[in-house]
Image (cartoon, rainbow, N blue to C red; front, side, top):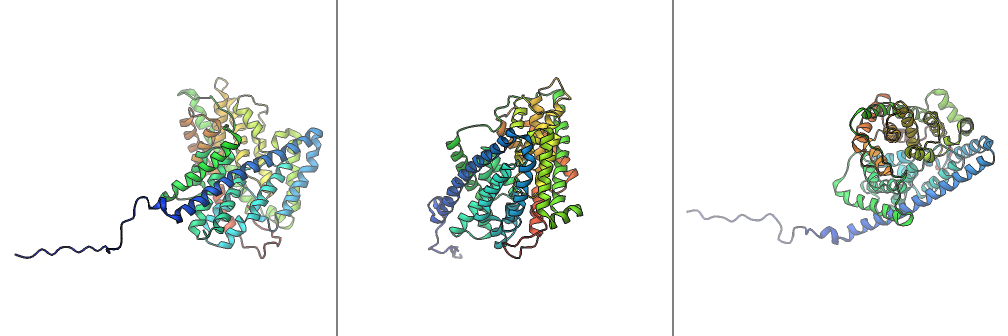
Length: 457
């Protein structure tokens, strides 16, 4: 008989299996959590301060218009020109919505690139200059800039605590951007979906709990300071199966095409096309911005002051079934948004996109007098936003959370999918991804303070 030789263990005797509670007791993990949670609190506070600042600035502009509607012809071009001059050097990274800067910083491993686009100086400049743009009546939103500010805050806090690797920076930017959207819209679920769909091409499962907690912290701070509210108020509209479902393909295709056209034109303008536009922006950026401001002022003077600002009031009235704007509002707000973005000033796209979609949806609803008009408005909003961003889930969740309406879930999901497909027929590259690619391809400035022409986002 052969003796049985016992199998030797390959595990060193002093190596123990990890305990399930080790992550809860690890000082390293707790340090990271505290950085993210503390940063999320600061992001929420900054978002609320930013909202008050922008609302106050736009209220001053409205007071000037109440004194004389012609005041816009002086104020808007002057503010646009001043913003162009201020952002033509060290504050260049404050231009546009800010979301492309966050995406590009996540994709780039260049520390200098991230520092140029996410420093505290850029964050403070984004706050102040976007509010200044609202003081000039620019047709912009604050949600994109809030994402930029949120990402910048967590980036700066993380660097101070030693989180400098590319993976750590990407995680901080993801959490900061998500907390920014959640606080700006008071929509926590939208913040999570936005982070997954728009900011990151992949979702790290191990980071999901920390990300969700950062969003929840930001939402709780917002809830505690300003209470529970719905951005546009509760909408009771519903779309039972039947002829009313014609609203889904109609809004999805029409608003998706309009959003895709907007994205395509913006990407072309930022890339310097047509050539005459690129040459004018490179040689005379301040003059170009003043011309854009004059065009916006002319539109507002001719068609109403709803073309200035975010369009929140007009969109809310459409959603609530009490429209104060006419059938021309949607197309003209589309043009006002484009003119504002062409000026290369700080400002976002979300709120104005919702206003454009609400206006177009209202117009489409007039074709079906027997149907609930608020259904068309809601579908138009989510479809146009999906057309601009090509982020259908984010668009659907934002619109459902902003109106506290779950009865429209299936029609909204069907509409945004159609809108995403229609938009892709016009603009193959999603707008934020395309703007981020232009940022990454642009040469680094010779110095932080030297004026520079060329591409901007």
